[in-house]
Length: 234
Image (cartoon, rainbow, N blue to C red):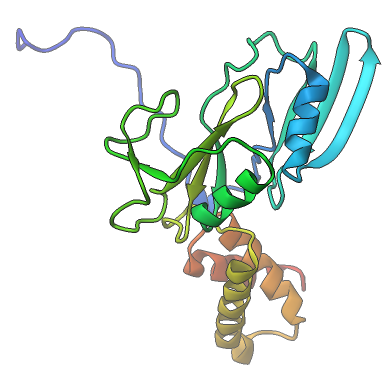
């Protein structure tokens, strides 16, 4: 045996599941935010136009508030007795926007103490202002221009501009992206329709669009849509 070879037992690597074969969604829908004053936090997030989904006080020691940013599939929860984390200890909460300057100016108009737009010199640093350089990303890259703010307790939020998503990252829910996705579904349906069994176009479109929003490629989504149409006729 080579004397330099480790004799420690190796843990078998668990293979990653085939993304195209996954049948269930695992949606991250709630982040817990530790706050010291529930009503103050509620006013702060409400001032930005966040939807109030729930405010339940089960006892003097337990209250839950859920709020959702505009256009977001994910919500935040804060309250009393919800978490033992220290108020203000959560950093690096991301809000994805299509235009960071417009979003930054909108929140500033609501009275939120916003940073200026910046980009990072060396990677991503969510817990401090180190390595921030002023202005947008010089190369105009998606994922690379930012702005930040804190809630009254100091929980830190980042606005991240995403204009084009990387392959497999799913799709945004904005109007422009949805319109482009509809046109894409229409084109792929046009390829399938001449040889397809009788069906309603909505069966193909819905399966195709859900697959694309889950991060599948156009060809993978096409296969899913065909299977859905033909499977629903059995």
